Image 1 (cartoon, rainbow, N blue to C red):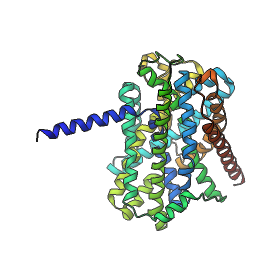
Image 2: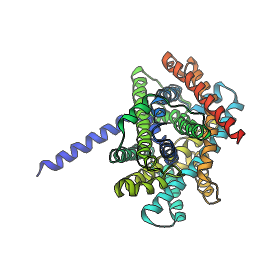
Image 3: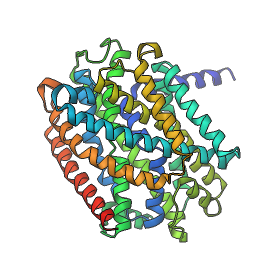
Image 4: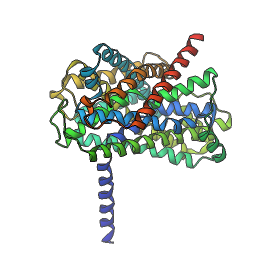
Length: 431
């Protein structure tokens, strides 16, 4: 009996050691599967079955290339993405990008808070408004009053809540032949609904807030490790750190896309297979799972929404705060206390509260998310072009310029996201 506590202790030590090896890349990847992302992937699976599953594989190298570039810019320059754009590129372009980012992220925060509150109402039964207030306050308290070291660990832990979608997928019956065929062979269709769903999938997978977040978090990690004292202080970086950044980013993006793949498969095998194609929210998808896959699948699906929402909402608000602070020269950083970075935390509070209030004014969150996807597409195109230049600029990354293969993938991403955004806008204009 005396050996059991020792085994448990060793197990906990291994988990802590693993968490220490996980960096901003994993947190960024997990945050990509936020509640609004879960909504988009659920809608894709319900409407089109397995036919959009190819996007999870197709977008993976694009995500890895762009996010690795963003991490490299932050790690080597000691500045967030907004700070480097301000220093080396047009301030007008920066202000436009930041303004669009504020709009897109606030809408996204609104949708995430609303989805979390509705999911908790469905699970526990208290009124929606109570849950909306509670989840809004909880995310603010965690981000403002918890130390960066503990908060970073919390974000990693909540990212693991996405594993429930693997369990949900496994307890639903899958047609693995169809899964393989649709995943390995892209299915293109220029039907308006298909195109809108596809662009929504792309917009929620390759999102500008992730660009800003990862670059800034690499600097936060350096401050926490004592490599630099503050933002805009150039650290000493070696090849070992760049290699860790690359591995961490790959792990985070693979994790993100596998989870998206699981959600599409779950919705395809249960909802689409039973003729349930008209869903607007992930909690509608969870309710529909009850009679099709049982209470356990329903609980897992709903729990995942709440768990990842607690991670994603602070990241959405935080990425806005980093961008605004760097654009206007405010003190920034989650490693700072409230009194040291008042403007930074004020932006976090404002973005989160405004996002919560939007839920009370009758705006359709799913329709808002479609417009967010368009805004994300519009921001992404010039940002990707700038990220490619910054990650190949010796003034920013020194000797650690991005690889040729990553530059090629990033350019393909630029063309792909730009084309998809133009097609979606053209389709909306025709409506």
